[in-house]
Figure 1 (spheres, rainbow, N blue to C red):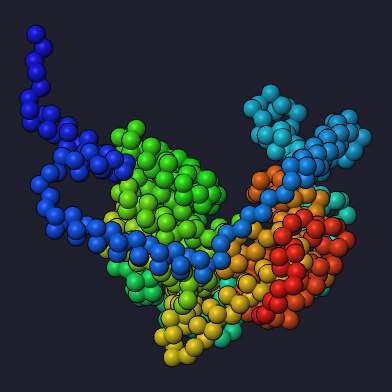
Figure 2 (spheres, rainbow, N blue to C red; figure 1 turned 45 degrees about the horizontal axis):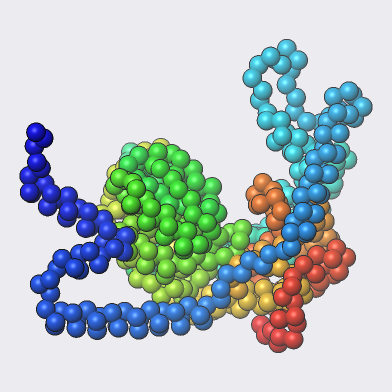
Length: 555
């Protein structure tokens, strides 16, 4: 006969099952077994539930005051026509490849030596065809060299091509244009002023580089005090800074998760986060962009059917291609509900969002202690380079020891640290002026003004009206090159984006606003968009134009 299991084994199994079902919202089984609860405890729980519901109502009211994310869709016929354009583009591309193979058209592309044809191919066929025949035709709207500080205006080096964008020749002249292409959100990218002067003076004090890694030589005094200021700015225990924003995500993920962990990542997260997930060896699942139902489903299923030790949702504050804002308040609720850890990438939101520029945590009125790891970069709002990770002292101390950046990369340059320190001090008001707050307020006004006016013209604009990233949908690949050239002809430098950086059917022109922009400059951008929209019919895509038609939009 088989031996019956001992009672304490059954009790342990029952207890573990109850803990699991508690997380999965099946706690009624536990409540039925806990018959010892008295009426006072029940009444207290009811009152607590009422208080929680009232808090939720207040939270919902605050949420309504924020601008929601908008993703207006076009008809299936329009989508089909975009695909047809891509098919025609590729057909012409392959036809030109045929002409080149037979010497009927001169080829400027890289080619493998004949004697090495039997080697494994260096180039992917479809990618090479796309680069040679699609990208090269519009290369003139990308990779434009600049010759000045990328402020509200920027100087571009004038150039021309004689071989269809395979090479460029410079005329020796420059053209000043309005810059709506840089991530200079608060206008600190300057070569004069308090920040620039302090950064230059720091070279005389500490030099340019430590010429060694942190674990060999240590970090500079400037980086040490910057890390303390970042922790104070974010209202957390401690922070650690890195010399490269991309590496802040990609190189530190392996120190935070392992093969026994599960990373739940937004489908539109940045390439640095994706690389970090791959390098960590952790299991990775992807939820639909900013879809809380999708996130909760993955969390619930992972607990119910998995045996992973750690759950860690990865999300961004502002998505740089969509202009959308993460629903941080709801993500924190799910994180607490399912016992997960939260990693928040604030590369685009720190400094640019919130009443005083403290990012998405302040924007959603959340407690910074509810986010386990706060990440951000200094390349946007602070006019510098590098990145940071902030959180509890235990987490930061762990990264100081285990992060590969401490062994293989140099610490931040002292003048770079000083640029961030001064700009962050101004945002915090530590300089005794209201300059920082006025920059944050001006950026918010510029963002809402440009977004609403573009919608009024009939354009489809993705994301939230509170976001300084303004993507305007053009859809057709041919429109990207057309808008890039026409905007430049009207004295405006903007970024056009298409496949593979976006979905094939969602080509766009993207504006990045700054507190340094004036209303007159924004009006010039709007005038150019109105003129080009009439020429290309692309300002007639939106079905919601009538909603904004009679709206009185003030700056």
